Every structure is written in structure tokens, then in C-alpha cells.
Image (cartoon, rainbow, N blue to C red; front, side, top):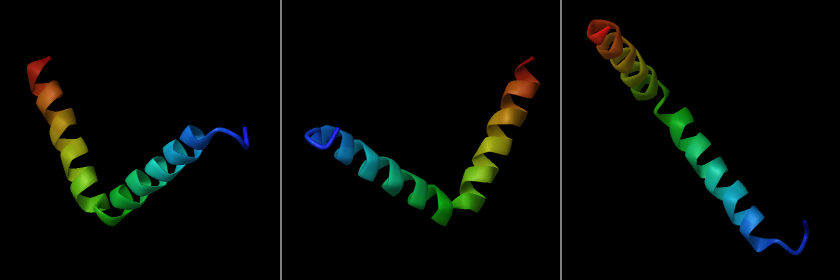
Length: 43
């Protein structure tokens, strides 16, 4: 696995996404609740 540069890139990308979600946790929770309510209203 040491020779795979793509794996390192994917790990760094995942860390960036996770850090971004951690910084916008309130927005993420609000959007999740909004989507849940939206689908609940549809069904």
C-alpha cells in the first residue's frame, strides 16, 4: 500500500471533508433534519 499515491490522496480528501463537516456541524444537522422532514411529508 506504500506505493499507492491515490490511496493517500483519497485519505487526505476524506479528512478535508470530515473537517469541513465538523466546522459546519450545525448546518449539516439542520440540512439532515430538513431532508428527513421533507421525505416524511412526502410519505
